[in-house]
Image (cartoon, rainbow, N blue to C red; front, side, top):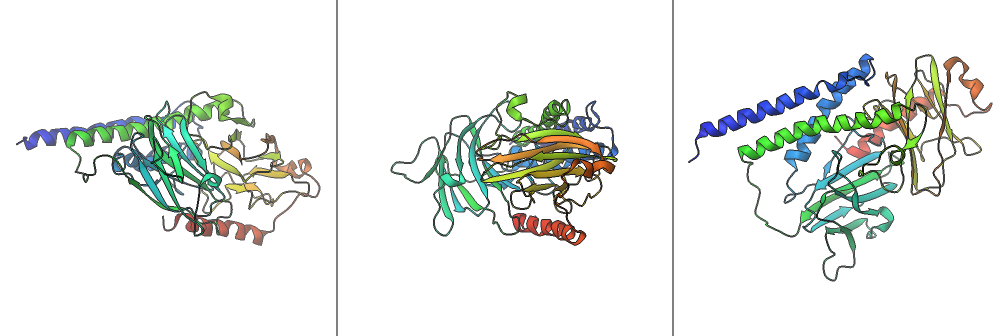
Length: 400
């Protein structure tokens, strides 16, 4: 019999290493490129704390591909990496050499995609082995679907199949909702069909120690990665560029449309006007977030718009304004107390990829830089606009 004191020593050291690694991450919110405002520093500490649970999900709770579960990555408080305000991200850890079946109700999200993700040079993996879009998926009249996931399609199988490779370690579903209150999220289950089917056992102390340390390192490395990324846009403020225009590392980016991102920095007495004509596409959206590449609160503030909610001008132009005080315009983005961050335009499965143009002006001169008949919004409409957001979040996430 193994001496209990040996186990105790491993477990004590495991917890100490976990805490020490998290403590090192505590320096990140005070780095040289981080804005000095108190809200930005506080948000840095907050994003570290909130992503501990996600790291544990990835590295410990749902890390075993023999027992996969589809889990939510982000929600209204747990975020990172430019999370889409309209989205539900769901995925599972898998072994690319095994075969899995995913069954359920596809839901009605306007944009839908599933990817097989390979290991890579980023905390979120690398390139994508294969993608299926919503229009690729065969769905029954009642919305039910079956998706086989594995290195080869089962013999005689003529239905949905997502191809994996030996490097595949995750399957990810992206659902982007245009009409928050009326589109339904997917409900599905994943089952492994091959390999050892014995039930799970409690982790050995050495396994737990390894997974705890990996979790703490993932928190630090993932947040550092997104700082590295946002610094590239920070160097060219108010200029929209895609990820591929600035970086060359393969990453599981949203398939079907390269997000166009710009860094904004707006003092209290200034506003940023962004103008573009959206292309013909299945779904488009404008997202808004802080320095930490996390979306603004989208339950109680106006932190995005999209193809369903935006109000276009008569000539089809989309005019978005970032302003600290409500300008009375329908497509307002509320900085929510932050002084700088990112804004992202997504044109999904589009015919074209227009580049938004930004101009920064004094708030007092805003309407001198807008068309004479620019659309306006009344106070009661604004209140309903915001109230609808929370109803939509509850519809999308349930009692999260």
